[in-house]
Image 1 (cartoon, rainbow, N blue to C red):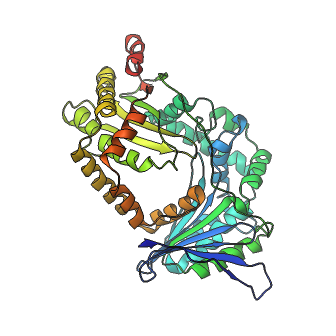
Image 2 (spheres, one colour):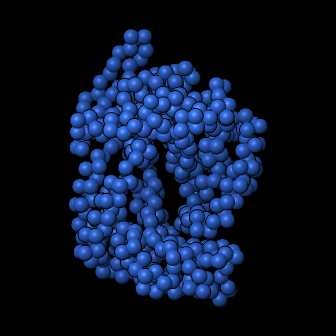
Image 3 (cartoon, rainbow, N blue to C red):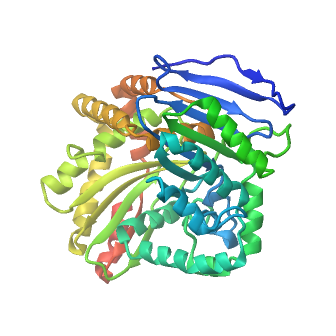
Length: 459
């Protein structure tokens, strides 16, 4: 597959409607893997990737809104709204929505992140019109009644409790707070018990109307789909709902910013009676559009991305101090995080922290070996391709690419970019990222003397 861009085509409508603009963004081989975009009057973008060899299709709608768009009192509203869009429209009850997709053996779900929200359905290709009509109806016609807000409140509070009962998950929220503080990016996506209890239908409804305008939405479909048919069906659904917006409106641009994280040496401890201590040691990373992200991806893979990685070998294989240990990156529009996670016995916390800190310092000072870099490039290339083996993953890729970057890269181009990462680039990004003073988040039953020593890990 190679990257290409064709001239935009505007098709006049026999019904006198305003015209849409269609572009071929990536041209596949014999039509397979071709990515097209149509921008409707009103700013709604529709992107598709065609794979005629499969019998399924995944349809999704991405909203350019996440928890970072919330004020402190609205914390959790984006995720609350995600739940409420499944509760019913003027055309469908909550049961109608779920049973429509269940009846054809499909699956339907949604997820909320810090910078976007996605609603999707995966069905047989012959049932794609049903999925389009159902998901579009949810996005354009949600009633957001007070009784639904009250009924779903308990569900969301249970979801918060479930997350808090899983310290291996909760520690990542704690790390975001450690690094970003009481800011929109530092607050939990789910909100808190207090903010969820305070939210009422009128505030959520205003949030919905503000952020679910067509200019903030991207429709994505992948699988055995016909682009023109998807465009017609989506346009009809939005027109019938009166949701296409002003004809002269343009799509919002991808998020941008210049946030610089200077957090260093912070330690946060939640002392809980857990069997394991859960730790994240980390520092500022890279924004998602930083060109150094390719080198950081290779560094992350070699350092903590698999069973052959340094951290896995040093912490688990050689010393048996943890079952789970890995590194990860999170990239946002204007900043990023790099973290190392490990779960271990409380008595082993300081041993694990010392090993992790020593390895970070070694790589910052000396870099990785050429062999480690070659192995990481191969692992990252393989996982990139294998991660795109189903229509849901393809829909996620084109939807997020359109929303977050406004442009698309073919798999071939992605693999080429990964393979072009040089040892010098990896060593440079290792110095820049790992050479920073880290911060630390811990959840576990640490005694007073253990807690007092946590500052050693970030000194």
